[in-house]
Length: 106
Image (tube, rainbow, N blue to C red):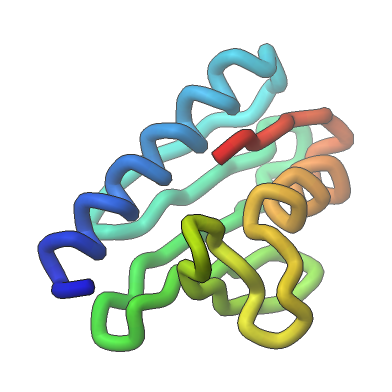
């Protein structure tokens, strides 16, 4: 995958995450800027940050639970250490930091 294809896939992923947050009705805000999606839990101000890493073809997730790297494998973004899906880990991070349920289906 070249960088343009990677960026297109990540743009679509970020949009899907934004839509999932909007559809959930959770009190969670987000801002997409300069290749980073910052998710802010309104009840306590904590943040979850997703950033694109085109040089490695990865997406990095930073949350209170730690920092994680995800690589696209067979159409799914998977943790490079434990193979867990990005959607699952992002949903768990939102629940842990905001107390709200958000389901991510991508």
